Image (spheres, helix red, strand yellow):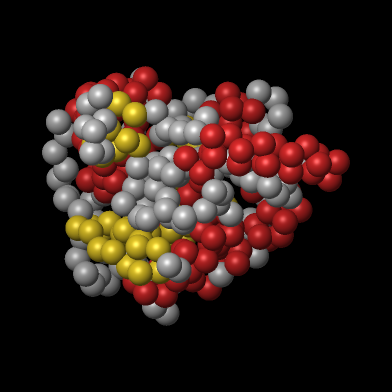
Length: 302
């Protein structure tokens, strides 16, 4: 099994009626800005361990488990609103980095949250690294009736148990699932991640540490005009990192493309892009050395 070079520490913060789990690396205080790592959908903060191990500079690093993921408690609701992540992040920063402009890194859903938050609170971000946080395809108002109906139908499916997450007989079974999803993930890393991505229940079955309510489609349409208005307000320099595999094209199959994503990025006043070679969407697992090098080089720029 993979052995971390820089083991993390954990703390729990009472925040918005939730017990928020936050992972820490490095010293409690550092002359460098605090580095905040935001994980993606159906993932956990421990997912950044391989990248943290590859970082050369010693600095203070924190990474929360989002509400309903990892060791953070569930919201006791049957669906999740994206705006809650923004409020959670703001209060987390108030507690762990009060009055400080932080360096923010987000992967996938975490990258989307980072981009939105940087538009809402531009003064709180010094540098921003977006790892495959592409946003969503543009929508039209006439899609709203079907979207609301889909949302209601999925709430019923959740209640009936149709959206329950699969359980596994062992940690090995969880590791095999992770490797099936990402063929580039080595067995030693998969075994280590499995112990953070899932836990055994009272019956000995390994359960994914994610609330199935996260599978409910948002009732609200993704409004491109709102997203671009947030991009327009980002004051921090942004590094948008993509994997060499076109995961965006694979997901949306013509509904949304990298070309459209790059066009959206023109609304960010100071943005540059980079590609991680021989990597898929979980690029921080596939090539943590490349990702760490890109992050450190970008954060060191004036």
